[in-house]
Length: 266
Image (cartoon, rainbow, N blue to C red; front, side, top):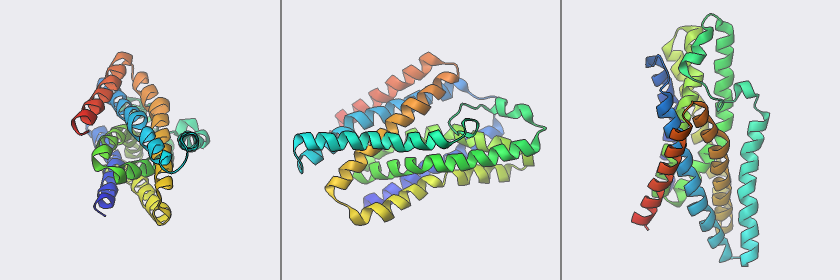
């Protein structure tokens, strides 16, 4: 029960970090591209390392205690790529211009200040897109936290960091369309609620059927989701901010941090 409560709290924190992006947008005249490039790379490093070094091997190991080694390997691999397929399918059906993970900066969004109707529509559609896209991320955060809060903490921080630009993408157009910081913040804040909603759905639907097999399948699928997010969204976004080497340094730093933490807490 303690792990479940922690998992819900972690997922809530990760989702509502879109509000942090909203606040940053209000007080920043220019996007700190170096900071975003580095931290997005760091987030990718954390998520890739956890997925491939912890979640995937643990899922396969647990399944091998129930099935033959070959069957366990097949189930783990299929689950991993199913996780990727789910998040890829969501990306496929989101219009590119509304995709919350298309690189946006504060100054770019401010260009069309006079197009109020267009800006408001863009802000609302972006908020809806983020809500849809972040739903499986909420499941990923929740599932990893139920296994180990210590393992989930860096996942939460990684997802929270990559949610910050999403908050900017929602709040800036809404603010310039309405002139209200309050409305802009609310739209940004609410768009992040789909992550804790994902956690609730995961709990209500999956927990009644809990088993070691289902648990392992979920861990493997979550690993696939996080690797896809890192490769398709975080790293390309980090590079598009114009600081390729900083994003790679962040990637390596994230992996080093996780490697050290695994050694310390092994």
